[in-house]
Length: 263
View 1 (cartoon, rainbow, N blue to C red):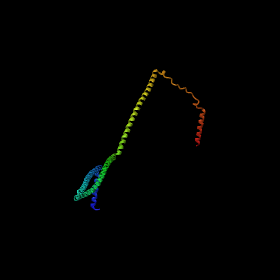
View 2: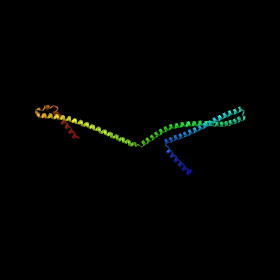
View 3: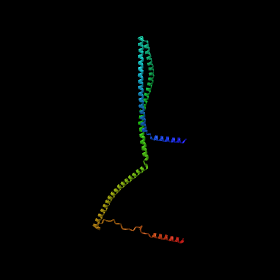
View 4: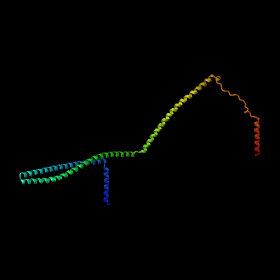
């Protein structure tokens, strides 16, 4: 591949890329509708001109037919009056208008066919424009939706989800700490209240006992309530060591000494 061919391809590729980037779908649809409407206007003008030409040809054809009929009557009248030469001239004029009428009839048929074709094309173009307008609105709605979705996805991609979740976790931890502090304060307040009531109850018992003790001391020893007396100690047979048990112990000790001497 030659250098100039490569340069041409590069230039064409860059131009196509620029054109593709410059094409806005919404604007292109609007431009397409405008161009179709311009074509519709031109087609309507063409149909109007064709119909006008058809009307002129039709009038010329009708005039030629009238002239044919007129010269036919003139020829008959000349023959009735016995003027054969005049009748011949009338028939010659009739022949001229007949030839003109034949040509006009051919042209009129062609124009009629052309007008019918133009009318069908006009109806088709009007239908296509109506359909294109409907599609344009649908495509514009889809374009708007696609742009919104693309913008939303860009926003989602731009969001730092990890930092957002970390922020939520920090806030949750702060809420938990605040709830724990509130619960601890409530428990401390309740414990302090219970301890105060417990002190009040304990102080009341001590005060009552102290008052009772003061009253006893004021009355003297005679007022001391009777203390339970221990029964006198009695020597039980189990507490007295029998003499026979000492002899048994001595005999056992003597036996142990002998065994030690023999070892």
